[in-house]
Amino acid sequence: MPKFFPPRPKQESIRTTICHETASASNPFVAGKTLWHGYDAQKLCGNYGWTEMLFLMSQGELPTTKQNDLLNKTMAFLANPGPRDAGVRAAMNCGLGKTPLPTILTTGLTVRGGMAEGAMHVEAAMRFLNGRLPAGEACSADQPDYAGVLIHNYRQFWREHKDDEVVPWPEIPPGFGHHYGERDSRAIKLMDLINDQCSDMLRLSRALETVLSRDEVSVYLTLPGVVAAILCGLGFSPEHGAGVYMIAGSAGILAHGIEQLPRSWNEYPFWADASYYNYEGPEPTKKVGDVT
Amino acid sequence: MSWARFAEHRDRVTSKSGGWTIGGETTLHGYSIHQELTHQASWMQALLLSITGRLYDEKQARLIEAIFVATGYPDPRLWCNRIVALAGSAQCPAGSALSAGVASAEAKVYGGQAEYYAARAFAECHRIFQQQGDDALFTHMKAVLKKERVMFGFGRPLTRVEERIGPIEKMAKEMGIKDGPHLTTVKHMEGMLKRYRLILNFAGYATARLLDLGLTAHQVHQFLTVCFYIGMPPCYSEAFENEPGTFLPIACEDILYAGLAERDVPV
Image 1 (tube, chains in turn cyan, brown):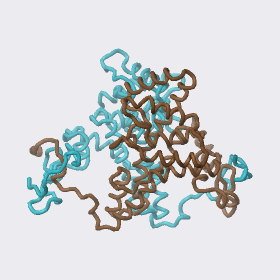
Image 2: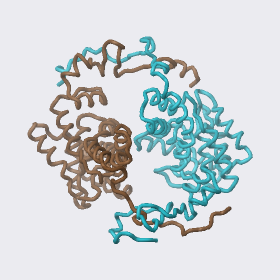
Image 3: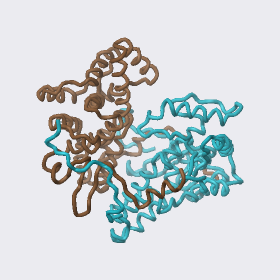
């Protein structure tokens, strides 16, 4: 590897195991050759597709054909959350306001990151399934009624730690619940789609669902719950899984946001009529001078 | 909860905080924005009002405003500022660059999350100190340090000096603003933590002052979201105006690669 500069203190260097760029012979800033997890990037791109790169970057190894097929199907299923989704709507609001282009996508992704049905929820659901909650001891899966143990541990964790983070953990174990008040049909459709590729994690999720559906208020697997199980089964960490969930929806976020760009602001709802707006606060009679 | 619950909210925007009567009045927590706040309240008073629903007097708001000034360092080496500078150097528009900086400062190591944790920890320590006294507080703090290896609100990356607290303390004294109960407890904690060489950091100090104003942990977190903002625009502008890519460029050899050696691509 050509060296252009004298050594400098180690702490001022970035350390990574993912990417290795060898400088070209004539320019220290231009990469002559690039390795991704040891593979020549140029050769990889000629032989593999985007989901395989996503898997490689996150896990350090290429997926098997079956793993890649499952990841592809799952991401395709999530490709467009639709124009009623909060993240997509955020991007559409940017589009109609003619917000600079990159912000349309990043704004949509930010909103897709939340704890309610978003990436934080997927991350939480993956931690729940893995039995690795932030404040809890990891528990062995080799025990009778493992699903019951996980639920018990989650409820105890929630009682003691629900407010530990800036966004609270959900009371219902993450990955389970309802979709607009009923069983989440999207979860069932995704499970149908990948039925022949059912992993141990999805089987565990079904076992958890059986227990939770017997509760006084029955709850069921939701779309983020099924996605969490699939991504756990594929070997993704909760942090990577959350990111995969966000990226998967980016196709629809981008398309719907940009669709609004050429349109006039009044072609998108503002709910301008006074009858839509219900103010339930105090009358504006307070005076600044009254402050004590 | 059936879908009827969602139907109740369809085409219905509800607010307890205020809003805009199109073509008419705008209100914020019971104050008319244009008849009252615009000419009688400072930006800081209005910000505190918007978060807490309470209008604080000018003096208190001025001291809190000073907290924002004291920690607005225009140094692009600082993590959130560096993001803004990178965005400027990449010729990103100002809004996305500055909002990326603000969002990045919701950090556990030095920013917004640390303040939330500190607020919760201080409230608990204050409760123990008030109800059970000195020994119980020290026992509690030792247990926290043993378990978490950190006491949020104390300690600082890079240095054991905290230059931001002194000027605010001086200002508070000059303005006749006394330490509230949380700040008193936190200063007491700092004395106890000397043996661990942990200093009260500025986030901890600001958090204690805000708790003394009655803010909750979530309100402290929300309020301090923009506390580093003043340092960001200069970092953005300079990087934006310089030749693109010249902000701290990294040569290939500057990366310490610790991964696998080259291997054959399976085909």
